[in-house]
Amino acid sequence: MDAQGRIEIRYRPAIDVEEVHDLVDVQELLLVLEQDDGPARLAEIGRKRLPRPDDDSPNWGHVRQVADDRGSFDDVLGDWTYETQTQGRRHQSATVVAADGTWALRRSGRSTQLTIDVEPRIDDDAVLAQLGIGAVDTFVLNVKNPRAAGEAGLEPEERAGYPDELQEVFDGNRWAPADPTALLDHVGAEFLLVPVGDG
Image 1 (cartoon, rainbow, N blue to C red):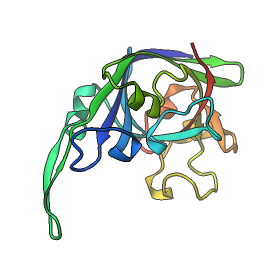
Image 2: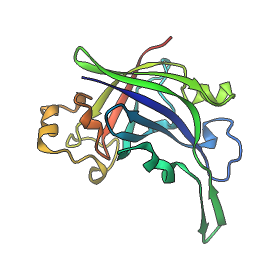
Image 3: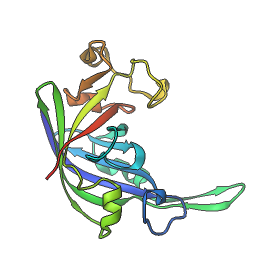
Image 4: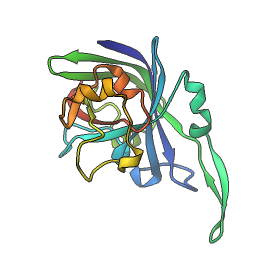
């Protein structure tokens, strides 16, 4: 199993934030993963940053949307304005491309490895560092069994509902390698990113 394509790493500034200085100013971190000869996926990364070698624990994410092309994500990635009863009109900024480039997912022994090769698209090295961009370029990527017990992650009703042939890949285990990549083709698919390499 090999899969590859284009990647955009995007962040959304917090509501009414004009300029991002640190993670307090960031509302969410998103990955747009276009796959050669495959679907496009929009994934949200927990803790608003990619995991770094100095992290105490790996980081998690989940698939928010799957589509035939990344253009289907434009409404989600764009900005909008809305009214609230207490604070009046609020503005939610569009996402910003922090870096883009290519990705590849390959089986390595009993795991799958996600390798990214990206170039920064913003000039703020401090913000890039806080987002975890450039700290590591290879991660072990495992997919969570949506039927496994546990309090962390999405609510049960938000998790992926796999057909039987994909659910069998877990073989009763809590995690499975992202092989086949079809495990990531379902909204609510949860995954774990463990940093394993840099440079």
